[in-house]
Length: 199
Image (tube, rainbow, N blue to C red; front, side, top):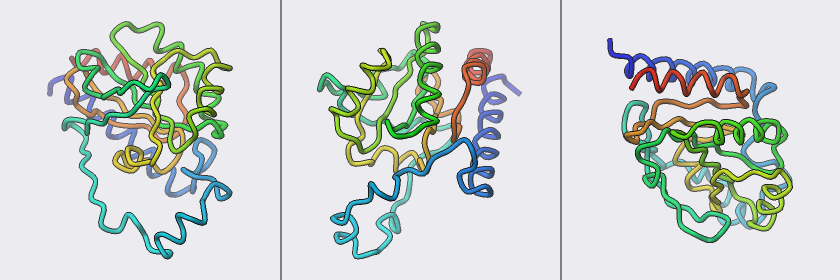
């Protein structure tokens, strides 16, 4: 069995295990709901008339296949696409400023981004105002790439149900797996090393 396939299997197991934990414990200690109750707008509720807007949605996301590309604007108003980072390992991190576990994880994402030339942290803020995100990033002194998923469409595409959620994409753009919930620097580094070993 080649090492790349082995690392995909390992990451898939991590993803399935994390999803099982999240489902059974209903959020547990490492995840937060996608949108807090007080952030659900009346406008959204009235537009959908209480219907499930994801009913007909079929995600195009598969472990071991090319990660779905997306293009979002960064905090400078420039368009950034996932495919811009071909040739590098990409850690896509879905997060929000109100998420306390995201807050704990952010310094480790910064460290990982700084210490690995062949890796990019692509932090996707979901459904928050640009000014709020700018203030948060400036206060934290973070300089990894931050993009804004203003409508939540990319989070939906990637089946994000809790924050933080991270996905790993290899240098060829292949989706290797994901981790729902907060990770430590050691855990992130171990996964990245596994990806490198599988190349």
